[in-house]
Length: 534
Image (cartoon, rainbow, N blue to C red):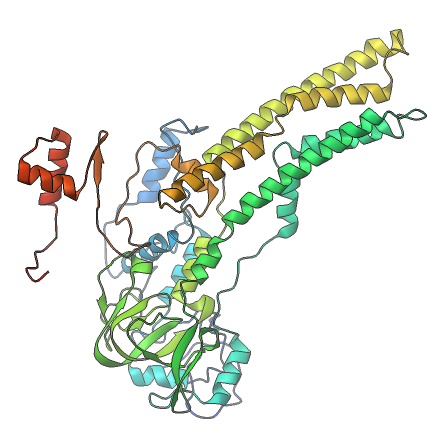
């Protein structure tokens, strides 16, 4: 039976007329990449790789998912409040989630977990399965070049590049789907929008035809005002969503625009989007990687920075040979989004676009999160309570009108007047300015944080940050500055910086016991070294 995840091996030389169907590769079998399956498909391992569903031997593990499920059964939280201490996880910006997703996948690859864990997300399991089947790091350089039908000296020729570019597409990450119809409906009907629209439509009906033969202009004015209020609220909802959706652009900005490659034996600069699998890329100091590549030649001590993926600021030395069974940890593979910080060399492209590790992480991180934030939950419950109260009171008014006023006093209130009255009651209950007030408040908070050099990529970040009591951060500044330096510390309202610490040591000024404990911990748990030259 054929394996849908397998990819036939490359055949060196001219294109063959062999079948393009995926099949289980046998030992030593070759294939042509231009007639094989797409590079964006999952690549099957043709050599012993990293297993993820099987264990090499009996291993005793702690099932964290089962432990978490027991805790949830023992203590069920029906609702959380922004002022409460029991809160859902922070809604982290997309770009900042790359590091966490990378580390999670790397650990799972090493330990062999996640594949059969029903509690994990489908996208995460798919990414792990695809990465676990990559074996580029396990193959020799000759095997890699043979599979990719490439040359270590002249690279690809122009015809090969054109064929592969036409078949596989440009080296770009695909944008996540954007259901505009659903989004537009959420803008218009979200929150109190449904009640406002229903009230506006009923008011229009009360104006005409129920208001004939003498329609009242005031009724028409009320309907127009309701439509305008709903339009303003929908506009603010759309603006808030737009400010949140710009994160994918920041991720795409982490990749370079041009790359130096060797094609037809000549070294040329091409747009990063034109890279194809099998391209021979020249690595140099300061260069950002536009695709996943296997190192084939070293020029000096090649070092590259993976902090954008791992969060580790230390440079990693490149290697030609495999240094780890884990594809994400081996040093003979260069990943998209990382950068060269020393030395140089040559590397052959193995994956492009969405098939790169960076592309898979970006897809995972950009996936919409299920569930609502804390503030959204509170607003939802508030909307339900207000809507239920307004609907109940309107129904009571209609019942009283139909059961008593209409039979006893037929000329007291017409149907048109009844509709206007119940709409007025409903509108009186609805805080129409609540969505606008919430959005403006979060925007003001984001601007104040920006003045303090804190960039909020999503307004929901301000919302969640305002509801926490304790914030634990690790390696602050690694993603933004790639510089792990603590500039100040605050304990119980007392702040200390290096200048204060120097003054305390020289002048022996007293400090609080809390800061003393922090200094003690910082001195003991410290990996810093003294360099007399600097």
